[in-house]
Amino acid sequence: QVQLVESGGGLVQPGGSLRLSCTASGIIFSINAMGWYRQAPGKERELVAAITSSGSTDYADSVKGRFTISRDKRTVLLQMNSLKPEDTAAYYCNVDLKVSGKGYAEYWGQGTRVTVSS
Image (cartoon, rainbow, N blue to C red):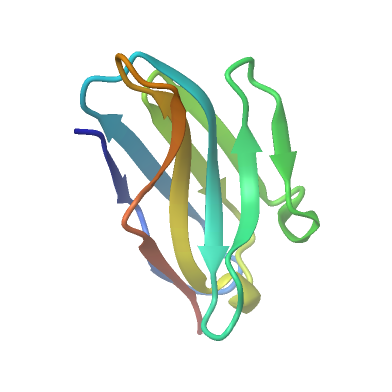
């Protein structure tokens, strides 16, 4: 059974930094794209950043130049710098992966809370 375990959320002051981590466990045949989404209270879930298996990245306009996504084997990281109050949200990792005997499917982490406040 595949699980995505996230860590790294917390409370930080405006201008501060946090690093989110998400690691996939289980019997995984192959990993395609990995990404981070966020959902603020009363808002829809939105893509924050994504990275393909070849290393190509994509960012929401609101985080370009401040956030950096990277990956290593089964782990996807999100380095968040110059955090703003509007970055406050629950952050979810999303991984497109293939388990033995099945096709690719998307899996979600449980979410980690990021609060940016003074």
